[in-house]
Every structure is written in C-alpha cells, then in structure tokens.
Length: 154
Image (cartoon, rainbow, N blue to C red; front, side, top):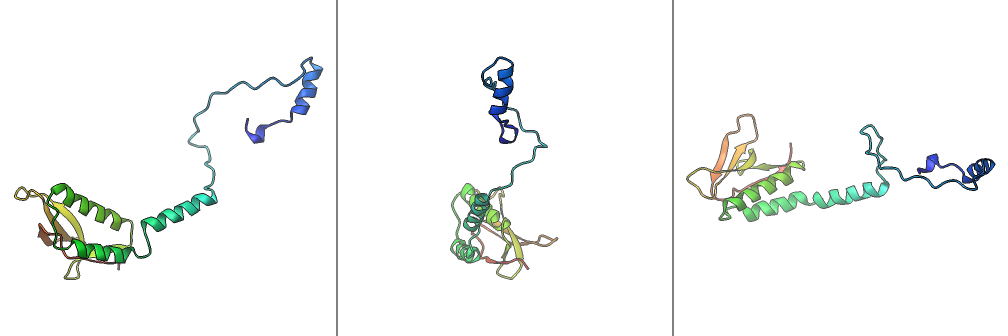
C-alpha cells in the first residue's frame, strides 16, 4: 500500500474486534498497473542533476575546441583506406559538432559542412566540403581528409 493511503491498524483492529475478528486480514496482492500517460512523474532528484552535469562535462569538456583543432590537424591529408572508416570519421566528427556551438571552416575561411560522397570511380569515397550557406557550393572534394579549422559559431 502507498504511504498516503495507509490507515492505522489500531483503529481497524478495534473496529473488526467489534465484529468478531481479532486482526486486520492480510491485503490481497494487486496486479501492477501500467502507469497512465497522464500520471505525473516525480521530480528529478538532486543527484540526478549532478549526474547530468557530470555527463555533460565529460561529453563537452571545456577544452573541446582545442581538442577538435588538434584532431583536425592530425586527420588533415590522410585517407583511411576503407569506405567504412572514412564514413566513420565523418559521421563521428559531425556528431560531435552537432552538440556544440562549433563549426568547421575551410582554409579559405568559409564555414563548411563535411560529408563523404561515394562516386563509382572511388572505392573509398571522397571527402567533400560544402559551403554552409544556402548555395552549398563545393569547396573541396578529394580522397584525402581536408585541412580544416574549428571555430565558434558566429
């Protein structure tokens, strides 16, 4: 029984004694009900908020931009000798950037989006940079990872 619905057994015992019973009968087990979608959820406990802050700090450390700048420098000019690995590099870098206020910028200073294209003439695909504006012009396309800068969104 829930704490808010609990009744003093002393009162029940005295009432039942008047009817010839000596104690409260054991409660029957109730089937668990599915929570209603209208049921209010309990507030997040303080330790849940601390956990969220800790996780956020792990995912987005204060020096994330410097780490990404260093990573982009290490990746520049490389290929990874498989379509799957090239796609993994592009996907993970883009996934990290989506959760931040950081953007990629080409050597010319143009904000860009990184993707991997798979033309028939290349078994490993091409890294491609497209301008991040409405025109989405191709800024770079090649088998080697492009030289990039990582900056805060303007």
